[in-house]
Image (cartoon, rainbow, N blue to C red; front, top):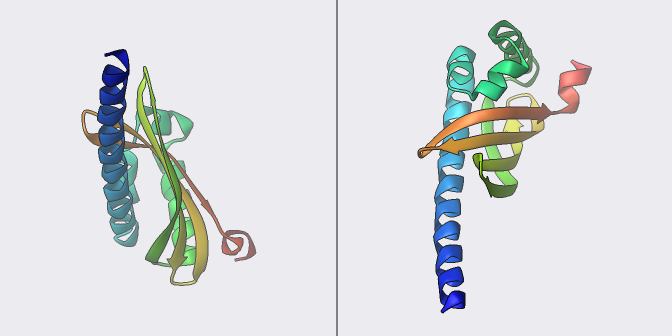
Length: 134
């Protein structure tokens, strides 16, 4: 009986994890749409409190403007990895991508917290030689 309950709980958790990952993947698509529209303020406004504590909106807008100037518009991505972590504090989804921009390639990592079915950007990392060389 205990093993059946454990199996049922694991099944429920995996379904929830898949849904949380889908929510985060959709949020990455929205992020890229906002990036292409140069609406960085909307990205910042919808981010998690931890994201806001890491830096000011002005600093974020300056950073994203520099990324846009050096890499150009977003074109496409290929998934490079993901993981979903559940803890007492909630669910966290990490998504890694190899992305193509108008001026070249970059790796991106998105970390989202999922709360009540909504994604909140906790951290965003982007790496490309073009960010240094241009």
